[in-house]
Length: 242
Image 1 (cartoon, rainbow, N blue to C red):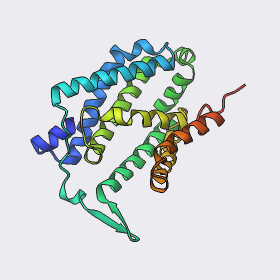
Image 2 (image 1 turned 45 degrees about the vertical axis):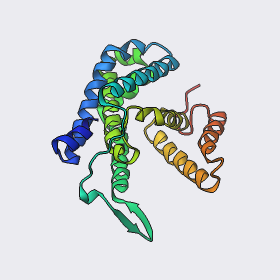
Image 3 (image 1 turned 120 degrees about the vertical axis):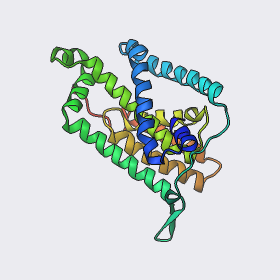
Image 4 (image 1 turned 180 degrees about the vertical axis):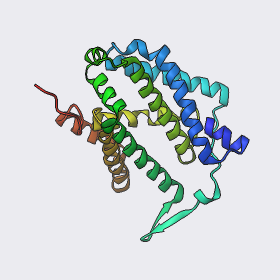
């Protein structure tokens, strides 16, 4: 909504609105993490997920009340409209841009996690908070920065996807189940796991709906069930020491 208002009402260039959407969402995430989520770190993952789902419903209701329930679309610049012809296959310019941006984000996050001091601190804090704290790592702020960055990326993703998926208050509820499936199938030990899982599930979902329209909606859930039965920690989960 931040990007939509900046572009459609104030004439801010589309690309200039993206970092603003990122920072705005990151600041909201930082406040939420410091005031709400910090009290759930010692709770179970199920409790954290249920709290998040409840918070999403409350936020959607608040946005519905303040912004209205009608669908919104961001006005794209002319050079992002239209299609490319790639070996006889039409690809939308804007869709191609989204693919490139997502690929760059995945690469950047993976490099940060594997080759920076912050990445090593984050991995240590996730593996064992007590040991990480004993080594002098400020676990609370590592989690706060990580959570804020994740919220910022969610805001950036919402701004990028608003033109394709349409923006309305219950926008996140439509896709929340897909987010959970992707993380469950890909595992939570790396960035590449959910990324590859999203590609696998996306291809399976589209192929199922194309070749078997009546049962296509069940393909993604079938894949999830099979994967979780065979590998409960996800396809790309790290092995644990015994």
